Length: 231
View 1 (tube, helix red, strand yellow):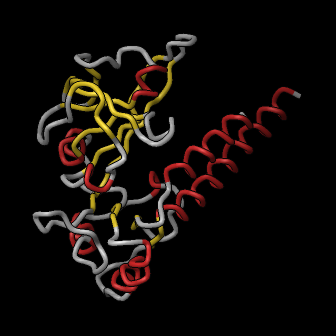
View 2 (cartoon, one colour; view 1 turned 90 degrees about the vertical axis):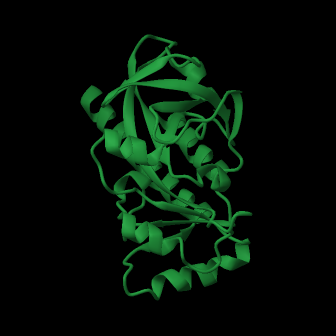
C-alpha cells in the first residue's frame, strides 16, 4: 500500500502545470469532493486571463467524475475505474492527451475513449468493446495516451451525455488553460471578486500536489488499519 501511495503521489505531480487552473467547491481537496453548478461554470469561463481558441471560445471545461466496475487482467479481481467526462473544449485544455488508436468520442452519443494504461491493466477495454453503464452500453471508440500512467488510467466521454446517464446536474470542477503562468493572479482575482461565485481557485500544479498529500494520508490510514486488524 505504501508503494501504491507513492505511485499516486508521483502520478499526480507529473500531470500538474503552472499555466492551468482549477476552480472547485470551497474546501475541496479532491476533485471527487467538489460540485460546481452550470451557472458557475459559465461565469468562470467569462473570467479574464483564460486562453481562447481560434474561434474565440474560452479554453476551459466543466468536468464530471464517476466510477465503473472492471476486471483486472493480472489476477481476475474486480476493481473500479475512473470515468471522466469533459465538455466541448476538453481536448483544448488537455492538449497533452493524444488519440493513438481509433478516434475521439462524439458528443451526445454513448461513446468513450480509454487510456492506454487502463487498457493494458483491465479486461474488455479494446476498441469496439462496450462498457455497461447507466442507460445501456457505451462503445469504446479510441485509445489515448497522456503524461504518466495515472492520467491514462481512465475512460473519457462527453460530460453532458454522462451526466444525463448518471442523472446528475452538476459538474465537479472547472479546468482552465490560462494565457500564461503569469495570468493566474489576474484570473484568480477576477473569480474571487465576483459576488456570484463562492469557490476556491488553484494553480493546477499546486492543487494536484495538495491532492497527492490527501491520497497519501488516506492510504496511510488504510495501511495502519490493516496492520491493527492483522496484529
